[in-house]
Amino acid sequence: MQASVLIVIAAFLTSILSGVFGMAGGLIFMGVLAWLLPAAFALALHGVIQFASNAWRFLLHRHHVAWPVLLWFGIGAAAAIGLFSLLIFSPTRFYVFLGLGLMPILVWLPESWLSLDATRRGHAIGGGFVSTGLALVSGVSGPVTDLLFVRSKLNRHQVVATKAVMQAIGHASKIFVYGGLLLSAPARAAIPLPVTVVAILASMAGIMVGGALLDRISEAHFRASRRWIITIVGATFLVQAFRIALA
Image (cartoon, rainbow, N blue to C red; front, side, top):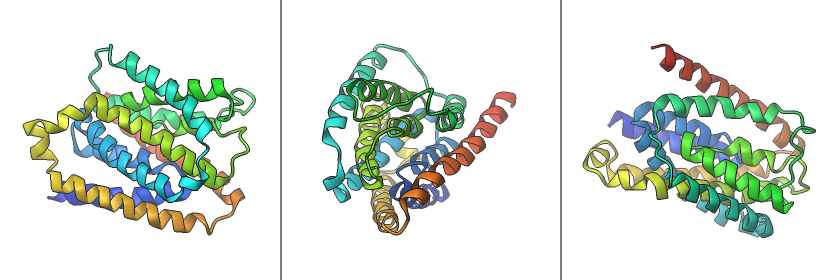
């Protein structure tokens, strides 16, 4: 019961963060699930809840989505899913936390190193491939998709809306690869269906709250805050990964 309550609360609060900044919420929520559940179960459950959350965010901001970007991003994502389905990989808590901890490093890379623009076809395809692959290993890929918007001229509403669909694609890939695990008896015992439903509703509510807050922050504050938030979160998970490795 305690774990179920924590999952629902985390789904709500982290969705508010995602609704405001378009990032970090999924990263934190994945860490919470990986701490409470076996890694494979956590990846599958995260995929289900976050897919619903990002789909809801898309509906709220659908008029701002940059559709041409998503076409090419989806092609790259499909290629990653196809490749990953041929591999044998068993996720562990260590790999999840390591991935969550290392990914924020990407936001500090000099823009001249990775001068990416989501509106460019090649960049979108490559971003879809890499980010979806990372989602299947660590559960999230927000920092990678963030890099696609470094040079783009999309405004904050377009970034949040377009990235919501990108993230939904990544979460759908986790459902495709790991979702069957949620149908097993151990998973149903650890994650009752009502908990999943309530967590989905909580994440939708959080997105609505975050969307309202998004309108109240400036473009400059939006861009400056994102980098520091994800860095602090990533450092926390990296410490956890080293603790697991040394245990």
